[in-house]
Amino acid sequence: MNEAADSTPQARWLRGRRALIGYAVLGAVVFVTFLVANFPYSDTVTTMLAPYQLKLVCDDQRLSPPIGAELRGVRLISTAGGDDEAVLDSPAVTLAPTLASLFLGRPGLHVRADLYGGMVKATIGQRAGVTNLSFTLDALDLADGRPLRRFGAVIDGRLSGIGSAIIAGPNIPDNSGRLTLDGRDLSLAIADGFPAVHLGTLTGLVQLAAGALRLDGLETHGADLDLKVNGTIQLGATLDDSTIDLTFSLAPTQSGRDHFGFFLRMLPHPPGPNAPYTLQGDLLAPSLS
Image (tube, rainbow, N blue to C red; front, top):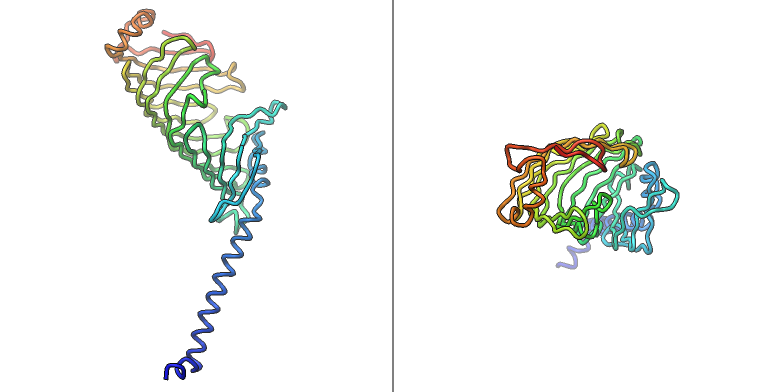
């Protein structure tokens, strides 16, 4: 009885339809896999970075299921000075094309990178010569990055954040962005050999517009002092051409007075939340008042 039912035209039609759907799904999977496997990751990254005098190089590339590629030994290189200086390096970066990149031909990538003991995730898209970037930072170890070494300072702790940027060209005034910061266990030493100030937690907003970095409501709360900072850093072609105009207030704890009383007494006036300081002038040699 069942064999007879299975041999009816309707049963055969249903079996054929299911087989057709199965083949279509399999074909779609094979098609997408082929697209991903043959996606020009290197060419896409090179195209997106070239206007900013940057390039990406890696030691090895392999597929990263279910979609994308994993790059090992990655270095972000600046080509501006002609000496191929590494700006950033990461042990592993995973790249995956955006849907617009796969099907509409618009350059776009999802990026996940191991960086300074933490993780960076970003989505990068490019249209009409403008790059749109959204990103998150997760627990980057600032001691690994040494971001303030150029200024003679040593900073430690973990930094997280979420931000976005619109990049129209290699010149800073053409670009804009914002970054909401969340730091933990931060400490700062003005120079090697000096005791570190324990800043603790960090919150605040950093914005880039018209060639200037604006610090809004930047606050730290730690074992040695509480710090509040607002103001602007006007970025020039080089750090030597950049200027700073910040207002900040200090509220030292008893631990801070015990450890840094000598330095606090050297300030223009006693620290306190109602008596702010100003830091103005050349970025590398500002005046304090």
